[in-house]
Amino acid sequence: MSGDRYDVIIVGSGPGGGSAAWRLARTGKRILVIERGDYLPRERENWDTDAVFRKARYQADETWTSSNGDTFKPGLHYFVGGNSKVYGGVLFRLRESDFEAQRHPDGVSPEWPLKYDAFAPYYQAAEELFQVHGARGEDPTEPPSPEPYPKPPISHEPRIQRLADDLARLGHHPFHLPMGALMEEDGKGGTTPHSPLLRCDPFDGYPSLTNGKADAQIICIDPTLATHPNLTLLRNAYAERLLTDAGGGRVTGVEVVIEGRRHTLHADLFVVACGALSSALLFLRSGNAAHPDGLANRSAQVGRNYMRHNNTTVLAISKQPNPTQFQKTLGLNDFYYGRDRSPLNDWEFPLGHIQMVGKSDGMQIEAEGLPGFLQWLPTRPFTTIAEHSIDFWLTSEDLPRPENRIHYRDGQVHLDLTITNAEAQARLREKLRSLCDSLDIHPHLFDRTLYLGKDTPISGTAHQAGTLRFGPDPATSVLDLDCRAHGIENLYVTDASFFPSIGAVNPTLTIVANALRVADKIASRL
Image (cartoon, rainbow, N blue to C red; front, side):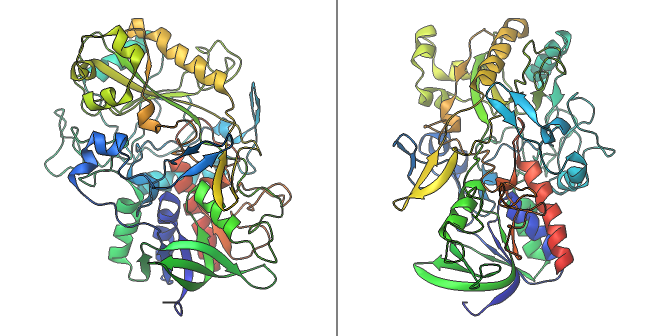
């Protein structure tokens, strides 16, 4: 194995690595994808709420330390397909304004060195690759696109359609979420006999037992392995460090650990796509005489500017039962901008985005352990509460601060995080709460913290971004505009590490679009 040589080695098989592999395999060159985990097992526990959420069966068994000295388990998943194996499948384009500087009470979200137009064709390609369901024109914040979504929107079930109608009656603009869900509807409220995803399948936060989620394994890795013998997948291989030549200007190999034994693999070009947190750690582990503070870290920015959104999942109680099975179909962006562009927002600063989240069940509600909830409805069984639940995900932008970073200290992983833009998140929550009465919902919102991780916010790493940001100046960025490491001519990054800011919508489609963009740059070199 140590003697093998490839044209390109990709470290990581999630949306960034998988999409790059899909594109580069079409060059006919010899491509290797290294994945530290294995295939996520298909088993009954995929859909077991207790196993997935309370026991964290599929979460990485690691312990990290926060800036205040507390330990926690990060919400990471090491499998073929990466974190996309359990993601919610919402695939947004960043808004055009997200590529510009944005003022917030705690500071400025920085301008991107490339704007929306540079990503637009790759967004379209990413939507087609991941078979996104959606409807153009419903969301007033949606950036321009001449082409429709590849798939029609997933229809609302009756209670969610009523919610959409009530929001529209109040002057809002609800829209169908852009979903990477492999669901084929029959036009009668159900799905076709051969639809990979059924409406009754647990989805949001769960692995898909039926392979009905448009994740990186199902969309990119497995189909490409089946059709391109020039692509190889190496599983259960931990990339410990990248090796360079004596001058540090070129990566010569990657040292991997397999079953306790070290091997060195060689290639002409290298792509790192481990996820923003793990990619930064790999760069830091790869320090040498030419890069004493970590690979490509002359700017001292490796691991810094970490972002993960301000995310909150809340449960509300519908006054009428909510028998919805597939609830994740509706979004609302009427508070995305400040009041100059979002008239329904009475604050001068942006608030963020609201979407539906997977439907609560009784076990989830019981596991949350919400004493206020139990005092309010002391005699209600958890399953009855779940039958009336309506569940929302709220996202506000957080800011890329240098002190928010991942790094090693005394051989241990430390994740330092100071929350930014918390007022926007609180105001967004209050906007939703104030709407409830008009939506036939009780005006109380209860946190579903277990969904995001028991130690939220520090362990809520699902939307990790920004630790290797790109830019034209090597003094202030780690990657150039092609996402190539400054000063290293054959090392690229295709995960969310490159983000200068994160906006307030789900980042996965931007990861995929940029991976396709960078893969085109690499392909031109091959």
